[in-house]
Length: 280
Image 1 (cartoon, rainbow, N blue to C red):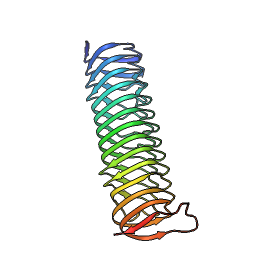
Image 2: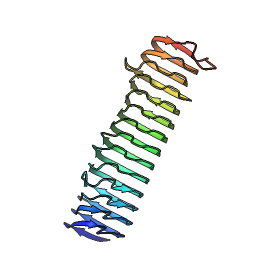
Image 3: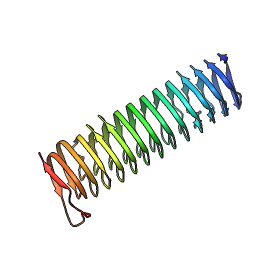
C-alpha cells in the first residue's frame, strides 16, 4: 500500500486509476473525479472540495473526513464502502452503489441521496434536508437514526429500522417488506400503497396515516392526536395502545385499540368491508 500524507491535489483526475492507496490529511481542491476508477483506497482525515471524487471505486474506507458542498455527487457507481466519523456537506451522495456501511456520519444536506443503493448498513447516522432519500433502494439495515426530510424511503424493499426518529411527509410509499421497531414516525400520509409494512412499538403522528396498504401490521403502537383518518382502504392487523382519533373505511383484517374517537364506515368502503374493530 502506498501512503500519501499532508499533500494537496486539484484539477482533473489527479489520482485516476490508483490502487492500494492510503491518503492521510490530504486535501482535494476544486476539480473533477480525483479518485475515479480506483480500488482499495483508505482516506483518513481528508478534505474533499472538488466534484465527483469517488466514482467507479471498489473497496474503500473513509474515516474522519469532510466533504464540502463543492464535492457534490461525490460517491456514485461504487461498491464496498466503509465510512465513519465523517461530515458530508455535499449534496446528492451515494447513487447506484452496493455494500455500504456508515457509522457516526452526519449529512446536513441529504436531498436526493442514496438512490438505487443496496446492502446498506447505517449506525448512528443523522440526515437533514433529506427529501427523496433512499429512492428505489433495497436491503437496508438501520439503527439509531435521525431523519428530517420528505418523501423518504419511497419504492424501497427489504428494510429494517430500529430506534429512529423520522420526520417525513409521504414516508414509505410503495414500499415492500419494511419493518420499523421502537421509533417515532412523524409526517402526513405515512406508508401509503405499501405492502408488508410492519410497525412495532412505534409512535405515529400526522394526518391520514397508513392508507391503501396491503398486509399492514401494527404491534403495540401509539398515535398522536393528529394521527386521524387512519387505515382507509387498508388490509391490516393492528394493536394500538391508547387512543386513536379516527379510523376510516379499513378494507379487512382487525384493529384493536384502547379507544377510538370516531369510526367512519360509509358507502365508500371497499369490499370485503369485513374488518373487525374492537376497543379494549
